[in-house]
Amino acid sequence: MYKKILIPIDGSSKSLLAACHGAELASRFGSSVTLVHIIPVLPLDVRGMVINRFRSEAKELLKKVAGDLDRFNVSIDIKVNTGKTAESICRIARKHKYDLIVIGSRGLSEVKGYLLGSVSNAVTMHAPCPVLIIR
Image 1 (cartoon, rainbow, N blue to C red):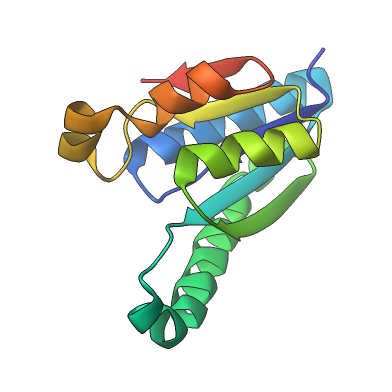
Image 2 (tube, helix red, strand yellow):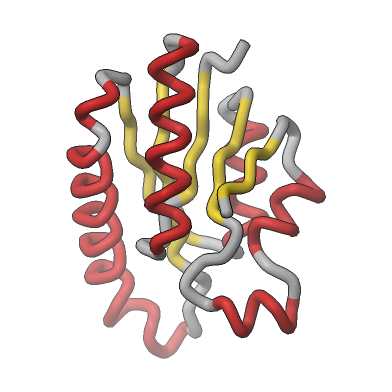
């Protein structure tokens, strides 16, 4: 049913919970998992100074989460992309033909998400596949 599962990770407790749920589903369905972290678009004047640091920190975060999911015995890939978070998640899902996105209900910016519309809500509205939101 779900052969490829995409799990966005931002380091929040909800995204880590989503990773566990996604990995458990993957173990039951024999699916592969991709953990993805999206680095937001940065202003040009600071982009060069910090993008490499952000990319490095994102890879370390994803490696740690992947290690925490070892107990599920599933194939795990990691991706780091730059862009608008919800747009990027949906683009990756579409381009690589993911069967399911498992995402936390709120990320690191809960107040901003409440006021402007959360990433999980935007992904639900525009994803090319089913979305499982973990609360």
